[in-house]
Length: 146
Image (tube, rainbow, N blue to C red; front, side, top):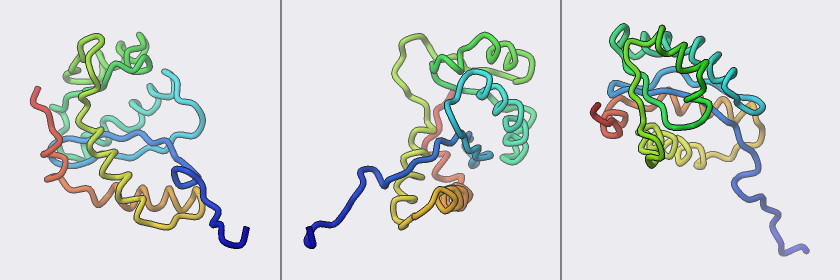
């Protein structure tokens, strides 16, 4: 036992987040506690979408792109987007997940794993800090052209 080092797979903790990006940078990062459903997703859109578009300097001509997650395609979310977003890019049914933000999540994950994080609060602080360091050049390289 004295020669064994205790370990936990995947770092021992996690934090679900929701965020957005454009070719010029990232928007707000929203921390999610519990299980996200269509109502929580709608609240995130209401609280963050226009604010993020303004932060990125793309208001009022931004485009909302999200994948085929059932929460994203819920009727309540589609109706809200119809009336509150200048343009919504629809993903074809049964298409592979080609969402460009997946590259940003991978980048953020790699940056976070360089730290020895010992609490959920510290994880949140590092996530926010590293999220704010993501530059537009990285986002532009992940961009899809619609």
